[in-house]
Length: 414
Ligand SMILES: [Zn+2]
Image (cartoon, rainbow, N blue to C red):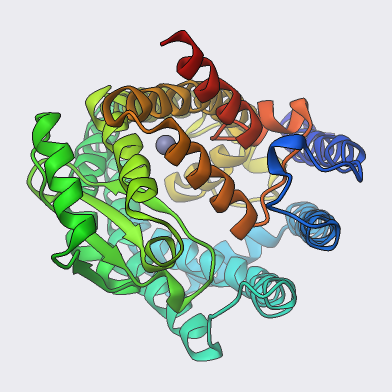
């Protein structure tokens, strides 16, 4: 068997197995015993419900990723990519337009596979546990909007990268990397204003106790408070959250309406102080820098494979093309991107502790922060006892009990 084909199929299988093993340990790690910190927040029934939620989610993710894995392997081995390429070429356009057809057809196929799973997750599992608020209409409109964004943003960027490689040969990767980095910066700036509002309503936080308490805190911390928004998270789910988006003039701090509903002012300010902590500690800039480094590394490695004949043979292709190379390289890059995502999660968990610390040290209400974390966990039925391996691989946030412990340690230090 072609070495590239062996590599690609092994990567897919290994990634699947690693995930399955992590999930297995994660499920095994559950006990009936409620962690002491959460006494009074959960009764036996509700705790059981949170664990059943984890079981259902894990089983669902196993079945969906197994199905996708099987489809992918069959598609690769049976020459599915060549079939799509033949259709794309049959229109008789040049390399860039043909590449656009190729990418668009693949995206449509991917959607056809994923939509039933997404629908099951939203309308069966999330509904069963009382989270789902998404209507069928919103569900399909979301898909159309995402497709629209792919067409107006994704495809032009894809075309530009193909153009660079067709035109500039061996140095193309530098141009392509530079263009994608510039594009990432642009998107980060404009997303809060032009993309996010396509999916949700953002209204400036209304005057009142919360806003004045926040402004008081921000003034004290020398933080220019602008772009404080409430988002209609309740349009899709009862789950709640808060986040920071964008840069400079367009930056925003966003609170879900569901979060505001369920928390006191002190708890909300603690959560926002955490978000500001990310900003003040430069976490956002650091993640941007890492993402740029990743983009550059990816294009550099890609440049070695762009016209590799064996890679095209592995995917059963009759013709070599830049656009197909971009897609195939995505498969070869799997181990690198998995490795980088683990590193990113390790860092992200470290930053979460730092942001908690920032909140506790500046707003000085550790008990409100702890209370907010507990309420968030209970309301979202978060797994309280995830397995270490699962956390290591996939968790961008430390498990809630570790965060509470860290905050309690800061409290006793003072
Ligand atoms: Zn955070």
